[in-house]
Image 1 (cartoon, rainbow, N blue to C red):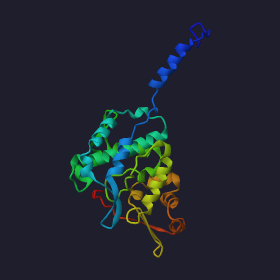
Image 2: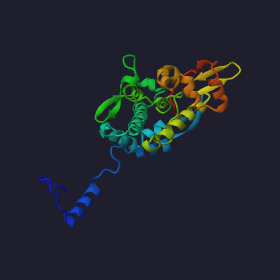
Image 3: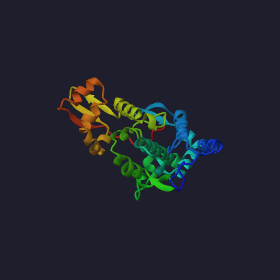
Amino acid sequence: MQNRSGKFKTIPRISAFAFAIVLAFTAPSSAGSFDFSIWDALLKKYVSPSARSGIHFNAVAYAQLKGDPRFAQLTGDLGKFSPDRLQTREERLAFWINAYNILAVKTVVDHFPVKSIKDAGNIVSSVWKRAAGVVGGKETTLHEIEHEILRKMGEPRIHSAIVCASLSCPDLRTEAFVPGKLNIQLDDQMKTFLENREKGLRVDARKGTVYLSSIFKWFAEDFETKGGVLAFVAQYAAPPDRKILTGGKSKIAYLDYDWSLNGP
């Protein structure tokens, strides 16, 4: 070790060993990351396949989830965690996608029973712009997370990953998003969403019409850097649909959006 004079001095072996032991017990196990293991366990327990109004979806058992003390623990931990600790793009994306989904669920749980997440808002303030919870000691809205954080990160696949607690939304995964496999998860999430003919993508080859989720209309600009909506969707569509999507003659129509709750 170099001392103040610029010369090196030897650390006694015992001191060096003790220093190493201190480091081992004080170094963070995963620098900056938030532990979403509770969220992962809750998703596995309370999210399951269902169908309603002709739409297949992953239903959330909100009534049961509301009574699980782990959910309150999770939202409390989220409120105390500083997002400034997140170091990589993957950490930030995974964190904020999970945070959005947790706070959307919390919004429903806080107002349960409701028929739609929109019922948690009013004519003065929509549910999207009302405080949904606390992140890093700061009250946060779903609008802030989606529009001021996630969309600005330039990752259009978020639109198949953030779930607004509604029937026509993409489905909640039965696992938390994690930085180490985020790219695989996002690809799978988009593919799964588009495979759902009732709310993701449906192609009518006879009419030459592509029916898409209204999400692709509302956020069309987010797909421009990927060649536009149809070029982006074609990457994840089944081969027969891909041929029509890339043919250049397709008409685009949008599926009706069902805002009823994604509950059982």
